[in-house]
Image 1: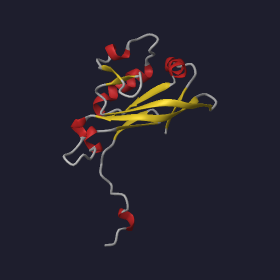
Image 2: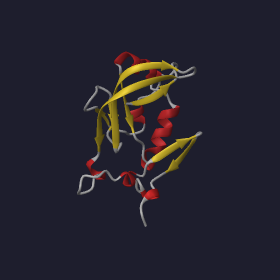
Image 3: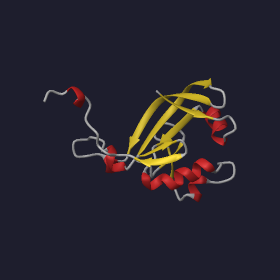
Length: 142
């Protein structure tokens, strides 16, 4: 399961409510400018794919448009809509995850750090990817 919160005034709100689907495209450092621009501009007024020179593709698991340049896309079907005040939470069942094969190693492991992921916090973007440890390292016998 995955959830997103969207203001009812947003263009995407009615689309998600009508179709019962949404996709989450994970941004990278390279996509940060387009991510910001698309977050500021409305799809009511602009074709975001065309304006930001992004490649729109039909999702593999939903009918949602996805961003081909995104290394990871998570496609969901809405299971519930929960009002939260200024936003409504769309609780989605994950129907499929697509990962660009360029970020998979020879053993089939996803190399997250190679995507140069981005985090958004309080209006600011940060690059991520520094290796900090492996699950269980805090209790590993020395």
